[in-house]
Length: 183
Ligand code: NI
Image 1 (tube, protein in one colour):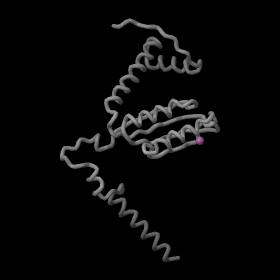
Image 2: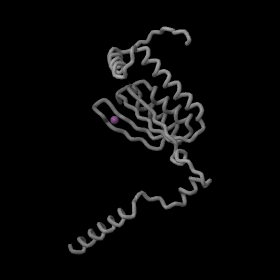
Image 3: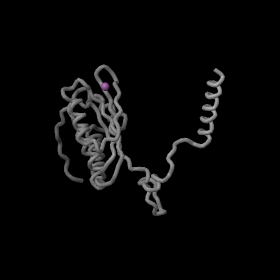
Image 4: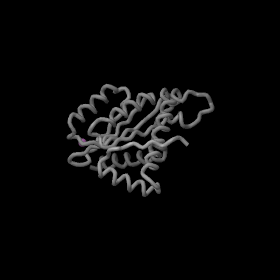
C-alpha cells in the first residue's frame, strides 16, 4: 500500500454535519475512509468517460440553483445557447421563492456532453448538480442481424399506442360524435 498523505479540507459546518451523518449511515469507520471511496468513484467514472469520449450518449443533467445568484441564469442560458446542438430539451421547475431546478436533456458525443455538464455544474450559485448518462437504446440492446437500427427505426411506423388502446379511443371518439349529433 502506498504512503498516506494528510491534507486539509475547508467545508461549511452544515455540510460537514450532513457528511458525518452519511459516513455513519454507510458504516464507514472514519471520514477519511468515506472520502477515499468518493474520490475513487469519481476517478473510475472519469476513466470510463475518457474511454468512451466519442460514443454517442444521452444524458440528463439536473441542477438546483438560486436564481438570485449574480449572473447565474444569464451564464446558464449562454452556455446552453453556445452548445444548442447538444441540448435537446430543458425542464424548469420553480421549487421555492429562491430556488429553481432545471433538468437538461443532452445528446451528443460523451466527451462534449460531459464537458458541458461540468461547466454548468461548476457555475457559482449552483447548489447541486448531477449528470446521468445512458446510451441510445440500440447501443444497449445488442443487435445481431446486422441491420442499421436508425434506418429501421425510420421506416417503422412509430406509434406508442397499442392496438387495443387505439380501438378504445376510437370508440370514445364515436361516442363523443354521437353525443354531439344528439345536441
Ligand atoms: Ni425558477
